Image (tube, rainbow, N blue to C red; front, side):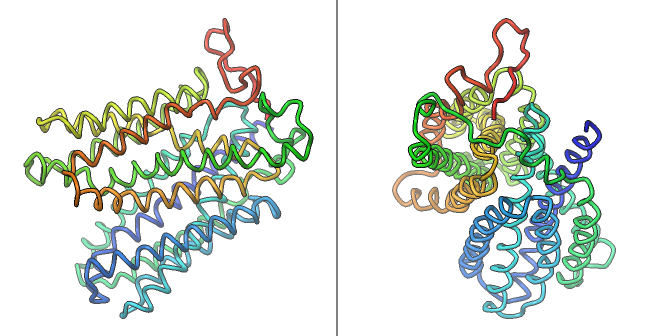
Length: 415
């Protein structure tokens, strides 16, 4: 049993790295594809919306299929499809064909994203301790691998190498990895386990089955709303952190890059540590204190007139946000083991829309207020997430919380 769980955990890591590598490979090829197709930045921005819509649709489909067929079936199929679809954006020479390619690639990526997260929920439940944040940390590792692949390909073959070649080679490698790794995934019997009933809450203990069915989605939609706020903040940081240092504080381009760099590094380090913090203090503490830390960080970045302090603020922002999304995904999946895929797809899908809209929302606000003052909206969202962290409490006695007097030993998860 222990060997099976260890293999499942390793396999989940591999799929997270694969997903991050596939998406990162597409991202690093955006400039070349934009030039090849001959479109403007504005047109590209519109086409990227299709990628997001395709991903949202894929998340909803894969979530339900994961519950019906099992993640052991859906994860590798999604991995193969996403890897195969990676080559598509490198083939078109006109905007309409590129639009279709991005829609398909986004759909396949959404399928892989949700199914691997649903499988991660089952692995975490089988381990009976937090492991979700580490999975999300390895997604970032995939982005680093993608950048190294692109740099190596450019250095070996020159700048004139067609994007379809590197995308195709990377996709082919992804197909092999997705097929080989399937052997390590959890058996179907371990995905549900003996305890597959929905987690009780204090208000549901005495409710009728019909009332429980009516109330259960409410918690999921609250988690989805929080995911949208947190991931909107992540999306805003991805696109605006470097521009903030350069345009608002007058930092040179080389220094401005540290805004995003420190944010991303802190995010990765935080996710590597968040599971231990969650095991000791509970997921509610991770979300609450993480959101407070993020609020302090983005406020410091927004209001400080000093470049060094602003960079420190972005680092705090990334560190605070790092553990929030994994806790929300985990709570959604654990709410009902028989509907883990559907619940994760709802939370991930709404959260993904928030991430896509984050850069645009901040951009729209700059028509009214200065860029740094627009970041105060992120402070508000982080404050709301901190205040609503109690939604992660699961049971009258507060399962997922730390056992008092147990020297930091977590109580068992009662899902």
